[in-house]
Image 1: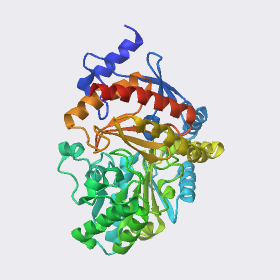
Image 2: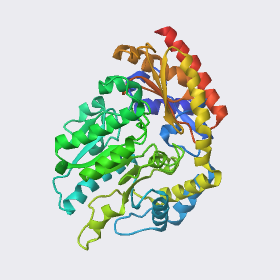
Image 3: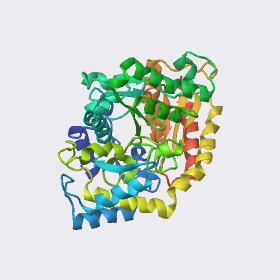
Image 4: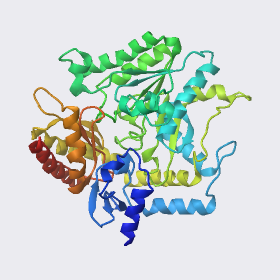
Length: 459
């Protein structure tokens, strides 16, 4: 047996992959990625693929960056591990200061985690304890949007708005309430009010949050969790004015506005934080993924000074933490990653190329299967339809056959790693490394055109 055969057998016999239908690999091969370079990845057979999802919305600076690997090695030799439980270490301190400086408003307090789900969990727990300490002990509920994904820990999963992801794990944490999302392409059917402008729909969707707070009772609602651009369902950007209205509503009811930026922070939209792209200042930002470009696991919850205020009392503490939160090696990598962002002007690169990326993907609108192209920065969704005029979507059976039976594998075989998803209506999602440019955009469009044309013919 070759080494590749040994690995394949071990993958089949021992590895439990995440969000994976293992039965689909029975008698076949588990795809195995062994190397990355720039915007490309290579499998165990040496075949090259364009990384159209930056790993998982993560590898902002691209693959194979030796300076990030070197930062990790240097820190591991110096101080490989020490917890942030009553002690500090320089790299966590330096990174906290740097994130506080970059964050909007008075978001100056940084709580490190190892990933995004933990950051969301941290934000909900903080909101609950903050209101208990400030004399509003009934405030514990959270409002989030339909089809929104906020993570897999029990609290984060409770906030998630995708019923099939939750059913196997119920009962979950009580107190989570759902409101409509900002998918303007489907505004008529979501609102029941045909013909609204984007501004009108944004106002309508934000006002549903106010209605939910009133319905639950303002004294019981602690926070609203929203992504700047909602991931699940296929990249829903906010209609104009949506976040300004949402900020007003949260202020009126003394409800915390939590911006879940696990995907949207660290350059994905062309700004350091997602809220900066759309001109709002939240009370809490949850983040992870691109903070280290994926070279080491790290997440961060960043909150307003006023939320930390009650914890300054000599007898108070936030009884919450993670062994590896703010890990020295991860923090060192994050600092090197942020240096690289500045040195190469990655934010400027994304903003300059965003219109080109959009225009390149919009060329696909001439295909009968493409209904909508939407997104922001380097974060785009292409919604697939059966009928462009009526916006008729696919049945669950058709979606299963098209996405899992054909599209996912066909795109990969054609040399593009991306996501074909039907957590809402069927979409293809694209989020390449931030170093990508027009050449990679053209390659993405060309591969999508060929595969989507074949998908339509198969229907």
